[in-house]
Length: 116
Image 1 (cartoon, rainbow, N blue to C red):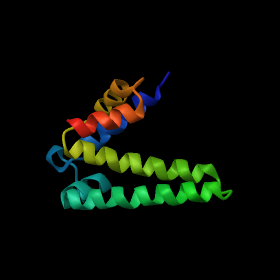
Image 2 (cartoon, one colour):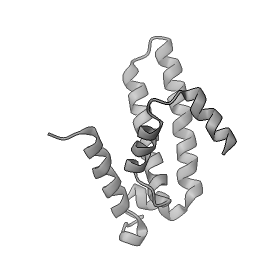
Image 3 (cartoon, rainbow, N blue to C red):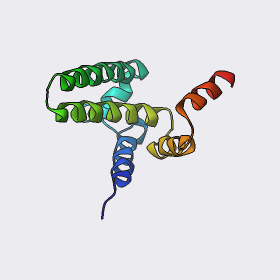
């Protein structure tokens, strides 16, 4: 049985394989094209997708299909994964960070970040 974490691992591997340094071709791969253009390209996409998540959530508040929100969050996660790959990070590290925070008060965690 496939878990959702398996999906993230497989997607991260595909993104890694599309890096130009690993043979990804910007002519045939969207990920390779983004990475070839550099951080400004994929960071811009993250900003656009984050805005689309906000707009979709607002639409759901007014009766729109929640599936639209899922679609936009998936786009945001995907582009965030491209950024992670560029910076040598993995979804597993994000999951580990979330696990580290599990059980902590969100207010406590935010206060800790202010003192570090």
